[in-house]
Length: 326
Image 1 (spheres, rainbow, N blue to C red):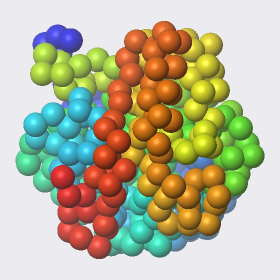
Image 2 (cartoon, rainbow, N blue to C red):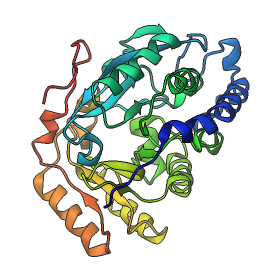
Image 3 (tube, rainbow, N blue to C red):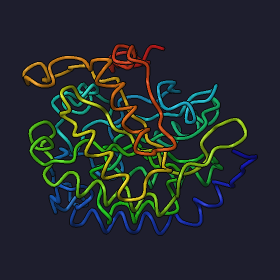
């Protein structure tokens, strides 16, 4: 923890043209995520994420100061969070199903997205937090360049389900300051059953290793506000359906003991989860407490935990102007 200052505007401007060029090429044969659809997004071909907007438009579900992220992202003034509609995963328990599955949102042009960036900075956001952005990264980067030329100077948070490829992350090197990836499962049977994501762990752990190589472990300033680094999120499902114990062992063996790990208790059986026997209830306190203790026993040094009441607190309604009520 220190008086830590970065000229984000200068850093991002130095890298943005290269990032945009890479993203455009990536869209020719889209392999942004582990589905490897290989459709030509520059010709408006549609992959599993169901994006039909051209590369000058984007569907946004919400843009607000958000106070429900990890404390070092939120501080007193909030995280400048933009939720993008659609998703490359099909999680049956998704708490954001209104936008990921039902595709609620407003189609805007990139100039409007620029205004969102600048408006959030004006409101005092600690960062620009891009939620579920992997499938729309090209128009985001184009908007970001315009905002940077209008002197946007905030850290960029990439808030992702973790199913990102090396090709996508190469576009973000020098642009993203804080990575916030999920690590949902270890075993393919559950990843396919609950999220329709083949090879999920292999894709995600490689992505997380690349992210850490780019930005390092978490650095905060004297006010405990994140300036750069990675926070790995793991949502704990009931009945160990998230392979939580095995994931912790894997992370230890891969050298992540000092990395900040956010173990999340907020699971609520939303959307289609009630149709699945082992995940049709909330997490028990003992399930969560046992896992926290296991993580500490393994030697993890930076574990973030949640109150059990978070399962209700973090439920959004994207039909409201402000989806989360804190």
